[in-house]
Amino acid sequence: MLNFEFKNPTKIIFGKNTIEKITEELPKDAKILMLYGGGSIKKNGIYDQVKSALKDFSVEEFGGIPANPEYETLMDALKIIKEKNIDFLLAVGGGSVIDGTKFLAAAAKYEGEPWDILTKPVRVLEGEALEFASVLTLPATGSEMNSGFVVSRRETKEKLASGGPGLFPKFSILDPEVIKSIPKKQLANGVMDAYMHVLEQYMTYPTLATLQDRIAESILQTLQEVSQPLLNEDYNYDTAGNFMWCCTMALNGLIQKGVPTDWAVHAIGHELTANFGIDHARTLAVIAPSHYRFNFETKKEKLAQYGERVWGITEGSIDERAEKAIQKMEEFFKSLEIDIKLSDYTKDYEGISDKIKDTFIERKMTGIGEHKNLTPDNVKEIVEMSY
Ligand code: NZQ
Ligand code: ZN
Image (cartoon, rainbow, N blue to C red):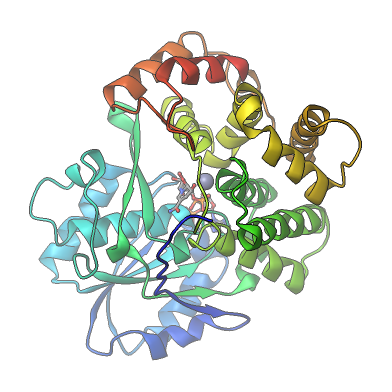
């Protein structure tokens, strides 16, 4: 097991009817900006629940943050924060709204050009951002309990990540009942994203971090167990709750401690969203199988362990079990009705592998993955294997 430090200051308030608890958690004299997305919260009653909890607070609103939060839109929110002297942000939404809010929390106190926070990137330390909290409406990203965020700029087809220890939410409300109104496609995205978050921190090489491995495997198994009832049966509170808690646990920092992590699938996937607008989770389903096959030799022991412990594959050599494990993973993605080839999403992929290669070179991402040795040429090949 590798050395590690672990601190996660986010208070989680989980369960039915917990949205009203924001009243107890918010600083009483704060000037709050409530941020939300394209309007789903106005249709499903979450907006009303939050507004009613906020009735005795000083609150401004900013709606319209799009999926894959857009820099230009966030800059409009930043103006309001400055003009109205806002000192607390409340994100009500999924990963996009929470990520946008994290960017704003950092930008509000940043002296330079806000875009630098993403391009340099600036690591935001404790005390260097505005305080903020979230009411999660879409389990998927884990943003509600981590300190990372991703912002897009459509104009330049960029999608960049940043973060730092100053960007954990003060608290996050996790009421599983919010999932009642989520379209099936978004639920599938949530399962997919959380599943890949676990794999990015697990599918590397053995390090004898036994507890981390077993926690990771149990999150994968729980996601597998809940996915069909979640997608294809009537709403069930416990299914919703287990799904929601898996998503949070998959990326709150716990399972990455003491182990090497990969994150190449996300790095490449972000380029597919930036170039084609493909949903974040679906880009992962496209890249992961190719990535694992391309890096088969260095990952086969963990692949075989995953095959055995998560899918019960006990027959055959390590190579055979590892390949079967990839096939099981692909079947699982398809069981979520998620396509796993780039050509299923766009016919316009000619030249994209070179473009992504060039982007990686420009950003000096010349050694990615757990061994930091995947080159832009390797990335190009992985993208081509996913056509
Ligand atoms: O905008 P509204 O109208 O609210 O609709 C949203 C949006 O269209 C809808 N939705 C959310 N809650 C709902 C709901 N619809 C009905 N009922 C509800 N209760 O769902 C759509 C997608 O929402 P979005 O927030 O974009 O999805 P997600 O949570 O998957 O977030 C994706 C973003 O997070 C980033 C991704 O790259 C992407 O930009 N990620 C953030 C990470 C992090 N901070 O740690 C890690 C991830 O790997 C990921 O990169
Ligand atoms: Zn993700």
